[in-house]
Length: 243
Length: 392
Image 1 (tube, helix red, strand yellow):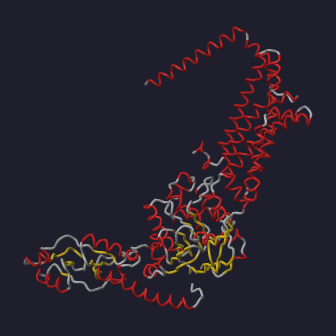
Image 2 (cartoon, helix red, strand yellow):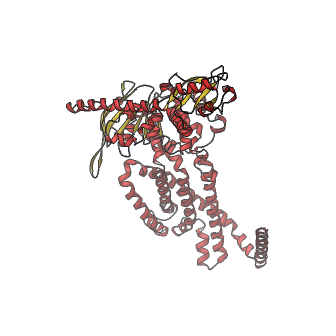
Image 3 (cartoon, chains in turn green, brown):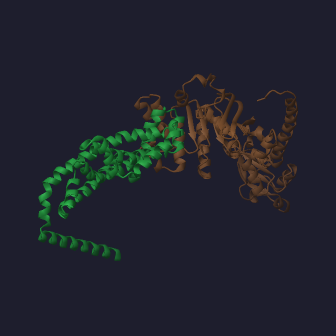
């Protein structure tokens, strides 16, 4: 059983590495330095999550209807060009979006939420559009052929079948969102960016990391939350993870 | 009853207007299956889809049970027409039960009623309700999915069904099974069905009537036997294939051609008698021996009868080949070829011999129908060419 031995050895190696790292951090006093920032981390993490929550939910509320609208047959002529505009929008760096929104809306939470909203909007819209366009024509024809109205077709057939793709868009978008919130500090909206950028400015790696590590953890947690809700909300028959 | 009245569809394409269906007029009597048959792009699917307005007619009318559907609301119209498509189109996000009950729900049935209906439909298509109702389409085989597709179309008990190559995506063995099941269901249900196919054999098997399409026009609309016996023109003839006479074998039952004259011997008869009867009835090789209930027990070989003396009961061989009155001629012909026989004994449901069917009778039937029809048709065509009126 060579594979078992190998994985056993790996596990041992990891345990040793963790132990050594623990010894080192304890002896060098890094842990105490981190503990010093815990109250800051708590306060800023809540602020960080608020920014994500507000901008993220606004984006979801706007993007899904927008994507749905663009996917309707009546919009066929304008949909592709509209999607092109959105694609071009995605290529603008988030920092530039934040800077632009600051020049119109001033500093503080409002321009930050707006900037984050714009950055989050695009992946969700695109996935909603693509997901709905990807629903098999046979399904749409069957739905029409048995006498569903256009609204019933959308709600009972098209959206449920596109839901997995839409959730994938939300997942990407919110991961980007959480990772982008630190930039919002630069236009005065707070968040964990405060520790990161101040840490960089002060050449204080511990301060910088006490912003960066929680940011990364938040991104992972948010991603997992979305994954779990996708698992629970997408109907079993069209949910690859529940097949 | 479905009646199409000058139904026409013109598609505007970048290359100009294309007439997909050109003044199609036809009528399907209640309880019959009408097969729309033809090569790709001949307008059969367009014609079918104009009935439930998946394709909007450019002009013309559709009557269902005598009622002009033009004034009906599209949703109402479709909810009263069963619709089965080749891609099956079960909703993957719904369970089998939800799929089957979709139309009853749209029609506002109450819960107890539509749930019971789902179980009833499952029994009808011979799938165990408890095992399947809570499953999802992706967990079923293609054949099972299409059975569910048919069940969904039948759930609200619509008088009319439209089927667009419903069994086209199923492997040949399962297809034959589903076709048989469907025909059996249809015997009880008596729906009026329009059925698109490009498979001539399927059309002959399933259809009470067959409509042949070509380039947007209805070329011939006849019963299958009529169609095979008397193709209207070269196109229909080539579409049906060189072996169309053989295809007719499927359509004729032994009952139709069997004669009740058959030479038999009993165990007590002498071989001499057997030989005499063989010659009397013109059999080449053998004669059937029956017991007191006229059930076949063996055959007496002519060669044996000629060279041996004694009673039949001591010299018979093997159980003879027999066919039932309800078998089709295809099976008979196949048995004749396989056993090098020119006649086969026919038995009734109790296994008693009631007559025989001969190769001569079969060839005569196929040949004579074809000859008379082509003559009649020639006269008809000549008459038609004189008057410009459309004779459909």
